[in-house]
Amino acid sequence: MIKRHLARIFIVFFFFLILLAMHRNAFAIFSETEKIPYSDFKKLVSQDKLEEVIINPTTIKAVLKAEGGQKSKKSITTVKVEDTELIKELIAHNVKFSAANDSGWSQSLFLLWFIPMIIFLILMARTRKGAPGAGLMSIGKSRAKPYIDKDTGVTFDDVAGVDEAKEELKEIIDYLQNPQKYQRLGGKIPKGVLLVGPTGTGKTLLARAVAGEAKVPFFSISGSGFVEMFVGVGAARVRDLFEQGQEKAPCIIFIDEIDALGKVRAATPISGGHEERENTLNQLLVEMDGFDTRKGVILMAATNRPEILDPALLRPGRFDRHILVDRPDIKGREEILKVHCKNVKLGKDVDIKIIAARTPGFVGADLANVVNEAALLAARMGKDGVGMDSFEEAINRVIAGLEKKKKVMSRKEQEIIAYHESGHALVAESVPGADKVHRISIIPRGISALGYTLQLPTEDRYLLTRSELLDRLAVLLGGRVAEEIKFNEISTGAQNDLERATDIAMSMVREYGMSEKLGPMTFQNGRRPQFLELGYRMSRELSEDVSKDIDNEVKKIIFETHTRVKGILTENRDRLEVLAKLLLEKEVVDGEELRKIISGKTEARK
Ligand code: ADP
Ligand code: MG
Ligand code: ZN
Image (cartoon, protein in one colour):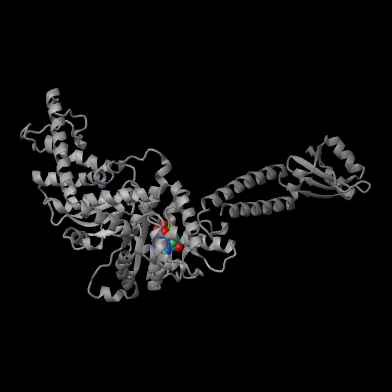
């Protein structure tokens, strides 16, 4: 990409060099000119040695006749003197002459214009390096233009393993295909759909597939393209994009990597560096508020960092519909592999199920990479089909690449996580005061969470009793205790759990007066000051004795809970094993299955 632009810059550079060379006055820059006194100049005139004379306001330039086969003609300059006879003499000696504006000045003007032009072109090319197909000639036009896709040609068949997201997007497709159907009853379709998920899970692909399925044009721009933009250009592009979109409705306008553009705006703009981004973001917000979905324009955006987005973007009427595009589970990976193997000649020994099992944590882009790499390997070795050995090798290569980015878990780590999450889940189902488990997963998501146990509250809660808090505490400790029981060893994976557990225990003692020893009192001097309380000294200092008591009480709550959890999990040891093994096999287990294991129905599978 960058190489191509460099080449382009050089072509432009040489083009200008040629122009420069053709410029008659400019040519003189490169040939030597001798400065001579006016008297010598007059002598040359009378000796018939001059071929051409150019008279400037302050100087006179002359080209000498070529002498004896000399190729390059010598030229001279002299400072102009008030001389009314000169013209007559020139005519008398048959010298060609002409007047000119000060050519010395025009030469430097030429350079003055030429050098910044080159710098400008280089800058321009650099800012646009992210846009394939956008030539230098399209400077100033909408970045969206090269991205109009009349028909993306991508369908839902090309995107696999994200069934939930597809299901949610079907409504949008249906709307784009017949907007009248929805408008008839006055229903409102969402204006903005935000696809959220890790890099490489197929968000961009999915957006294109929506356009492809609905058979509408697809306008897209990338948020990161705005960051390097010149002042005012970003906002103009957004305006342009929406204008074009409205003309071509029904259509989809897609803003990829919106986080680059839609970062939270600073409360106090200190440096001017963010101003352009903010202008662009503001323009986007204005356009979003101004346009009417009834015309059939759907706005889509994608991000892998929803947490840094400006809340203004997520408000109702803007990107208020969020669709999760998560890492695929083992079944999803199998389907994605099938999509990418469609045009690959597979060896007879290839079992896609096994490849899927070997690639936990891989996203669609990684899997596409594996298939491609395997095909290349097989081709290099001159095979006539891509065999399992090529796939193995390709997986190892992709893993090596991902390991550098710290994205892959070893089997041992997976095992630890499986037991850890099973611990959380079993405790959650065994104590009365915890929320029901909705799903357990050992597919890493985000940076910090390796696996997760998703609990959904069955009702909205405003008050929690002491025993309910203790139950929640127990669930948090469940992961760590499961590791202790199974491996006789503990890992760093429970850090976040322990932090939250300690928080709960602290609050119980200090804020809710739930400790027997300290009684119904609050000791909140550790509370974070609220915004308006800045500078306000928090009430009383705690005595050393009380501080010690608080620590002891917190410790007591945690230790007692730890013992309780150990009891629960030891009692359920066999269930822990079944669940962890199932998790290792399937990576995701839903609440239903978990409850079956607990009631003993799945135990026969062992
Ligand atoms: P994202 O935008 O989420 O970072 P992309 O849509 O750019 O991911 O995906 C990059 C490539 O990886 C796609 O072009 C496709 O080849 C492959 N890919 C990613 N996800 C999937 C999927 N769910 N199904 C099929 N291919 C996928
Ligand atoms: Mg993308
Ligand atoms: Zn945990």
